[in-house]
Image (cartoon, rainbow, N blue to C red; front, side, top):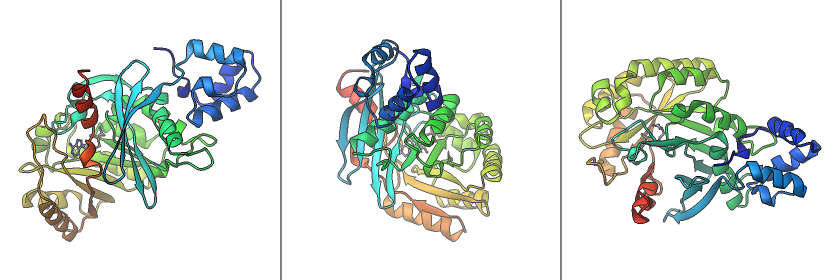
Length: 348
Ligand code: SAH
């Protein structure tokens, strides 16, 4: 695979263009073109510069291979990377703006039992420019420009564990929030982690005011470890300390993801334990009914039961909501689409 030009910040592009002996304004043209989701070959550049760039860099690092539109208008994408690998993403329209869910790795090595992204293990990390390009091509597809973006909110909740690909993820965050670029506000970005504690501290020190989300999914380490192998390495207590540090550094409330799994984590005792664990903390709990993954033997609870659990948490003093299962009919949950598409096309 060639290099990824979208990995470059504007300043890095300026240096690159100078190395090629071109004038600096070419870097501005190039940067603006790339940020509009254009291929190198479609950017307005001198022929010689274009040829030099195409020798060394991928013309189109992320291509939309397929689009699935759900009954609720949610779009789900399969993206093809330059080396042939597939990743997925989601685009959801809300009253307050449009949210895109991006992937940070091909596959994942965290091994959470309920998650389809992990089925084939980790294939490879995405580069910062490959993460960014997902946003650039989807923004362009929806007619977005740099002046008027169509992607206003981002969640790092596609395939992969963002903090397991730390440097590329942080570089991506700097690229996507850069002024003059697509410039998504850090406050509109949520990063979700299964709880890689040392990296949570590092992230708190980066000075990027994004929303930190942690996948909790249980109330004690032993039970959590049944579905999330990482729980054997980092304890809930350590996660809570890292969250408190994040709040101290950024002043931002943190969020816990809690996927409701029948007979695992959402009985009345779990509700009581969750209240005890989180009461008084500057956090919010996002409940979601598990998207059942065919390959795994896990079920979710009914909507009514989910509302009962939600009510229990709220009565106990927690800030909590039950998320809609967006795009459920199109394999909305992490890794489900890629897994089924690879089966269908025999790419396994
Ligand atoms: N690796 C990160 C981001 C992954 S996905 C993390 O673990 O947080 C975003 C969220 O979806 C996580 O909370 C994850 O646990 C959850 N999730 C994964 N598969 C799911 C499924 N089948 N149903 C419901 N939630 C799921």
